[in-house]
Image 1 (tube, one colour):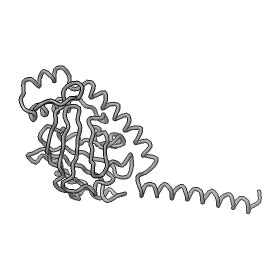
Image 2 (cartoon, rainbow, N blue to C red):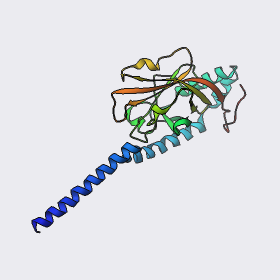
Image 3 (spheres, rainbow, N blue to C red):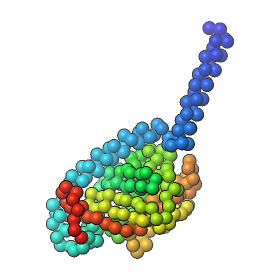
Image 4 (cartoon, rainbow, N blue to C red):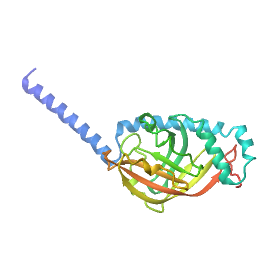
Length: 233
């Protein structure tokens, strides 16, 4: 094969490879990393399936009987939250988070290890479940695996964060945002009232810091054991 033709073929191959790389970078900058997005969609589907199974089996008959021994929506949700927290496994879908201001609606999984976060936002296992009256920590990616918290820095004070668990629906009102060091675990410590703390790497494409959003519990609606009807407080 003539040298000139070989060079032409090589040039075309290099140009094509360059365009593919630029396209991938462009998609990542504009939206999220495309390859991990496909994988994340599959894993998010698995998380949704496991959440459906959880909703079919929880609360159990024993949980329902236990509800008769406590009074008030706060006590009932706390009992169910503590019961569910003892049963879930790492990577399992445990609820759904919605943030209308940044168009997020996605299943939350248990755990913040690398494998769990590929499925969706992950609940810090060392923090409480919604309804326990303490701090709930949830972490999520910004550029890979569906990038659920990509626009976390666009959440404003006063915005709603909605968390739908198998036993109740919770509304949190954003009270503040902050940029912290990755080692600052104090942001998910209990503060004497129920709050949710969302975290993600900051800035985009860097793990140098963490962007944190804090939301205080505003309202709770308790689900009935079957049919996901509403229970009276």
